Length: 433
Image 1 (cartoon, one colour):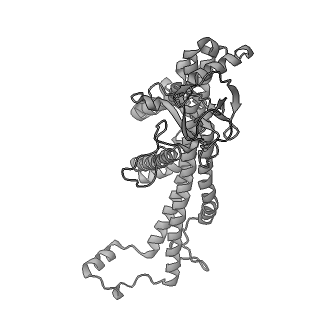
Image 2 (tube, rainbow, N blue to C red):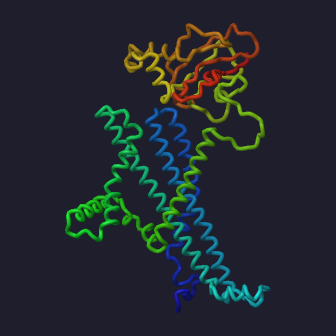
Image 3 (cartoon, helix red, strand yellow):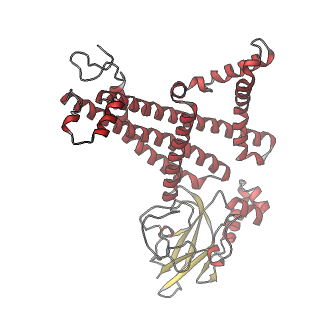
């Protein structure tokens, strides 16, 4: 019996991949859970991001991207694997129905094409074997890529932890967050140098020489923590049969494809792009007097931006309006340090709590219909919707007439923010009484 013949009582060839049933089980059970997990990772990051300063936000964004890329890599690989396995199953089924293969004499094809098909000598059994091999390779590569990205996330976390420790011990604030990448590069540098020396001069170095022993020691040290090509059996095996350049190109294209999906989905969730064709119809713009942003009103349904100031309602009732101004860890510390340096440096002391509130309120430059609002008593506050820390101010509206009114306050723009339009430098929150 040849390798491609069927064992007694079986529809599958003898050399069918023995793990095909386990592959189908794992792919089918986990693919939907992985797709849901990707959404949960997005929600967790978007909920945590408003509470982070610039340094921690950089780390969290990287870890979120790597984690989601790892999850999506598995999900895409498993979906593709299920499709390829379905194709393989279809071929196996058709082969069992028509074991004598294709009857070319019954098809209306030209003589040249028929000779070409016969010369190629590809049978249905060959196609079944190729489909089986493709499915297993896709499954193995998906798991390998996902594990590689997870290890990269751990390495970045280690680099950030070392950078944060150096900042604390040596008072080197310039290390954050770029020091993280420097630490990662330093961790990988000895192995990279050893690899280059080995590839370039390994054959000319004596096995017992000092340089050869040093290179071997580096290889062994990195192998103990799972670093190196010999610890990635799947890729090494594939490279040895397919070729290093082809595998590298496939890896690069796959990672770039998943990265594009992750970045695009995050941009959509943050509202940077909108889906739909509105021709020349403008978007509602934050800070524009001709726009109403639903996230400024706490009674509106929809996605909540934890860093946007908000009032009770677009149509408030009663004599007062409650205004919540969230604390922005990426913008407000620099503004407070510039405006009230002595107060901000001692902000964690009890005696500076009220002066800090007053300084924060001063930064807002609060107006109603263009009139500055004085003598408002701010309070520390935590928004129950988002758990974002911030400040609460109660604005009297008893004496306002019926109709439209605009509450304005200064936006905490970034250092490179666009200040060409002064109107965009302020929030404009319209309400009607």
